[in-house]
Amino acid sequence: MPDTQVLAAAPADATSTTYDAIIIGAGIAGMYQLYRLRQLGMKVRVFETGTGVGGTWYWNRYPGARFDSESYTYGYSFDEALLKDWNWSEHFAAQPETLRYLNHVADRFDLRRDIQFESRVTAARWDEAKREWQITLEGGATHRSRMLVTCLGPLSADTLPRIPGVADFQGQSFHTYRWPHEPVQFAGKRVAVIGTGATGVQVIQTIAPHVGSLTVFQRTPNWCTPLHNRPITEDEQARIKANYPQMFELLKTTPGCYIHDTDPRSVFDVSEQEREAFWEKLYGEPGFGIWVGNFRDVLTDPKANALFSDFVARKIRQRVKDPATAEKLIPKCHGFGTRRVPQETRYFEAYNLPHVTLVDTRETPIERITPTGIRTSAAEFEFDMIIYATGFDAITGAFDRIEFHGANGTLKDHWRDGPKTYLGLMSSGFPNMVTIAGPHNASVRCNIPRCIEQNVEWVSDFLAHVQARGITRFEATPAAEAEWSRHIEELAAGMLYTQIDSWATGINRNVEGKDVRRILQYQGGAPQYRASCDAVAAEGYRGMVLS
Ligand SMILES: Cc1cc2nc3c(=O)[nH]c(=O)nc-3n(C[C@H](O)[C@H](O)[C@H](O)COP(=O)(O)OP(=O)(O)OC[C@H]3O[C@@H](n4cnc5c(N)ncnc54)[C@H](O)[C@@H]3O)c2cc1C
Image 1 (spheres, rainbow, N blue to C red):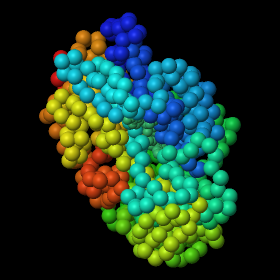
Image 2: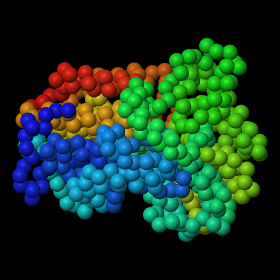
Image 3: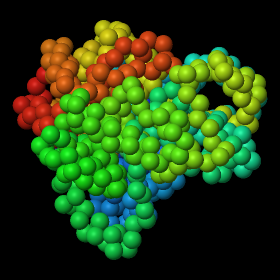
Image 4: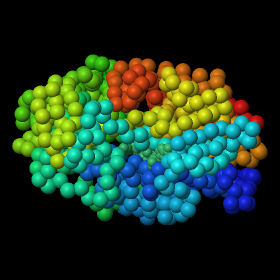
């Protein structure tokens, strides 16, 4: 922690519209960044599109929305009293509980007084003469700030499918991200779900028993594995709280900051019986262990990956009664873990219900949404409700929705061929701007609050350093940016996921121009990422020009 006494004091004029820092976004990242910058005595303003705090957990109110990180590993770790006070009720908490938690954090640290809700930032322009950012809100209001911290979220730019007729449907229709705050009734309704990613899976398994009929439109099946959620008992609660310090230390050592760590063995180091027994054990255990705690070569060696994919395929065949439906639910175009692994609870069993139908849109593509339902190349369906579980323009989408004008041009132009960053925290040509949980950062492959805390703490220390020295301009050098961007490419080499179309590789058929695979994520693991950031700080923030 830097010594806050040596910092330049925030301007005394409370009516001034020039802030020390403007933060965009009041999710986990924006909330913690506000807390830390306030501690440095800075005058900070947060702008947030929604009407409340919580980001992901404010927006995604769809039925079944819940963690696939263990709840107690996901909460903030920076305040001991907060950790002691909060009781998670389940190992993988549902969205309402997480939103309550984040509101509790906002109350506890009185965060809302510096957050302006219903304020979408549309543009941010660097003013070289004044060394300030000017940001513009929807509606035209402008605000100025010496520094800009973007906390936009990797999954906050929702996308509807590019299918003709989406606006024509006369029934109820919802994107899962923009789920209404009021209860939605399902009883007796004919419901369609488009999309079978992590969100679609959570929705389908949750509403299937409660609807009149459910028709699932699937383009890409996914390798879903059991979540095994359950309530936290009183004994477990006590143990979790007693072990928080050790657990957070452990989380700093694993590649994704999960409690699961990669098994150092190769798939081929063990006998077939041992392998099957290990995989049975992983399949029976809660959480992401099956993905991030598997043999070390499952995500890098195609032969190892094929063996494990076959194991999961056998499970799907055992669980789905109709063999034709089971085959449709087994991915054929990608191996296990090369796309985000949805965690499920009786998802496959939903397809055994007589009123649930699976439509494979690769066989019979959707031609259009009609006023009464959906028309495919084979049939016309009538629905009362369509749920779009069609996800996000991930990682860079929220950046594309703001016009950033830096010192030499726009961010859109600078990132035209993929993001260019230094440490995944800043970009050359965009002075006094830092990004939390953005592209090229460890956070997207991480149990994200752990990586967000690291990002925020590093950035806060850096901004304290800047203020203490009277520095009014900082910028990553093009050379440092090029070196980091090369490093990102090198780390991803050999990872099977880079050969697959998915949001993790920047592909989104619903967004124009998102049709070329990119390396968007840092693959070296969180401990190595943290070490790189710390080394830059220890060397006086090398790779930047400070003036
Ligand atoms: C359904 C779902 C479940 C998830 N579960 C997990 C999990 O179990 N474990 C895990 O590690 N990760 C999970 N994630 C990833 C998730 O994004 C992170 O957990 C986390 O919420 C990221 O925090 P954030 O603050 O970076 O972004 P967000 O929570 O997305 O917050 C960003 C905020 O910025 C605001 N914003 C964006 N653009 C603008 C703008 N132009 N102007 C004003 N405000 C703007 C948004 O409204 C939003 O409130 C999940 C994601 C989803 C969608």
